Image (cartoon, rainbow, N blue to C red; front, side, top):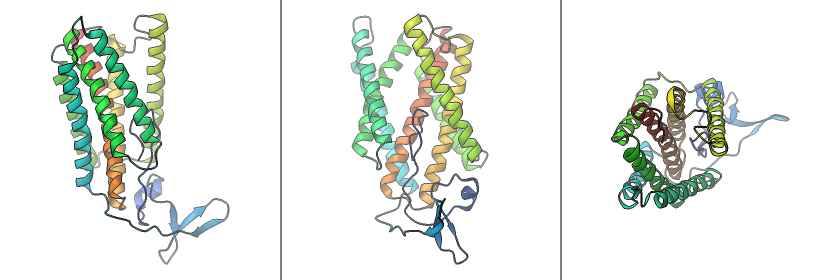
Length: 292
């Protein structure tokens, strides 16, 4: 499974058995449906030039991933984010004397977290230490920007943001389990295209803000900032649905237990995305034209 952050492309779980998911294979989304079956039920890999070829059987090594594994690894990763966010909030002052130093540490931690997430995204297998290190640095970044936003822009906004993030997660999970959200090829393509556009606009806004000053393109303040924030949260919710789909497929097809770390990594990235967008949105709603 690849990162759920739209900056990165997505990767599927390692296949551990030859079962096919008929519905997903029909729309081309099942990462495990890599072949065709003849009348005897034997699975063949499809070669675009020479046609179907006998598939190489993959041996199941070790325990298969379960939902309990995913929940445990996700709790561990998110717990690390929360722990270091609280430590950063308490230990890094954001008063006038210490604001610059704390903000510099937060930016450095954010860049390190981004770099570690890139490294993990390009690795073939999950590295738990790398994922937990990413979570720790991400926690430092979130702790400082949350403290700054709560102190200088909108007191109480962090509680609103946490509750909002939890509500989005619960809402998407319920909608996915009830099959109100169906992850199809069209859904996937739309989400990826919208996410790329969103990221490009965000980068453009940052560049305009850095070189021209002010609010850049105005995407992080006022009415346009509210609309942009809502779109960001909706995109995060869509990526949650993609994460749930990949976890469901991994469990159904017996992915190795270690792949639960990738599930935790993807879910954490998505929840951090939603939290940051919600923090920005609530800060605008509570603080007028100010932005985090």
